Image 1 (cartoon, rainbow, N blue to C red):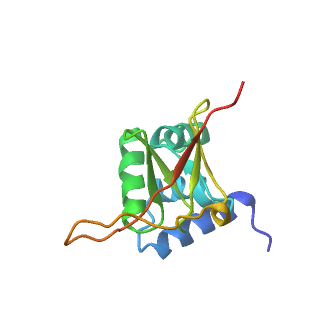
Image 2: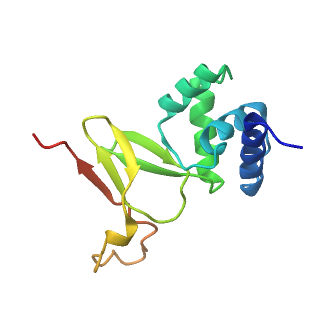
Length: 143
């Protein structure tokens, strides 16, 4: 039997939730389908995911989108990338990799990790350890 695209998206979304140990509620499955249903990685904001959810007719509130994205991050399914200290993007790609932030379109995209070289990091204060290094390269189109 051949699965439809929608059935495949639901299966991928449900499997993704299970891999993070999350219960597949209607809202979580709907958002998971939008995030990973086609097998591609995504960078979304809560607002862009809310808009996509509204367009698809899923009827998930903005507050639920925020709470669900936090749950996905806590479950290790997504990572949060903060730009400008106030704008958060959520990335379904979980390996360490740099990002391009396109200032003119406020879009976040993956940058080639194999071209980034960090040769040294500063010493950290006593009693601390580095948990993660985020690299966001800001771009603007040249005139």
